[in-house]
Length: 313
Image (cartoon, rainbow, N blue to C red; front, side):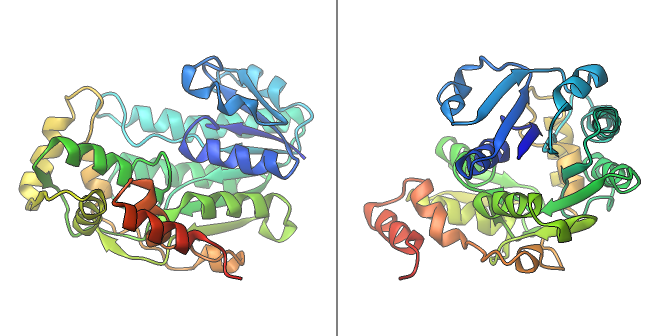
C-alpha cells in the first residue's frame, strides 16, 4: 500500500511510519521541514519518503495524494497561540475539511483520522474542535475510520517524559486538576490499531476508543514518574480556583506548559467506555512494562522492565 501521513513527524507519526515501513508499505510523510535535524536518522527507513508540503494548501495536498491508497491525518495541537480557539479550529476543523476536499480531488477514498477521547464534549476548544472535525469526516462520504485515544505514552512522549523533565527542575510541583483520571495507552498499541485498520474493511465507518489497562489520576501519574526516576518530590494539589488561575497565568507564557484550555479539558476523565483495542484483538500494554526502562530508573527497575517486555514463550 501507498500511505500518505499528515503529522507523521510527531510522536505517534514516527512510530507509525516505522511500523508501516517495517511491514512493507510505502509511506509518504508530509512535513513543513523535511531537513529538520531531528528527522535525519529517522528518514533512513526503507520505503519512507519525507517531502516538504504546506498541508493547509489544498492544491499541494491534492498533488501529494495522487496515487495513494490511504491518507492518515495525525495533525493535532494541545495549545494554541492566543486564547480565541482559532488555532485549534485551523489545526483540527479547517485542516480536516481541506484533507477531505483534496482526497476527493485526487480520487482517494480511505481516510484514517486521529481524534481524542471525549471529542465534542466539554468546554475546551481542543475537545470541541476535535468533535467538529469528526463530524466533517463522518459526513465526507469517504471510507473513514476514527481513533479516539486517551493520553498516549511511550519513548518520546509528552506524558511521563514531560513530567520527568519538570520533576528534575522542581522540588515542589503545583498540580491543577490532580484527581482527573486517565487510562494511558501505549503508543505501540495505538500504532498497531492504525496498521490493522488500514487492511481491515470491517473497520470502515467505525470509531475506536483506545485506552490502556491502568487507570490513574494525574497526581498518581506524577508520583509514579518520580518513583521511577528515584527522586523525592512534593506534588501540591491545587483547588480548582487556583488551578484555573494557574492556567490563566500560563496562557501568556511562551511555550504554554499549561493553559486555561488544558484546565478545561481536564474536567472530563479520559478513561474510555467501549474498548477499541479489544475490538481489534490487540492486547493492552501496561505501564509497568514500558515506563520504568523508558525513564531510566534504577538498574533493578530496568531489569524488571526488560523481563516484562519479553514475549511469553
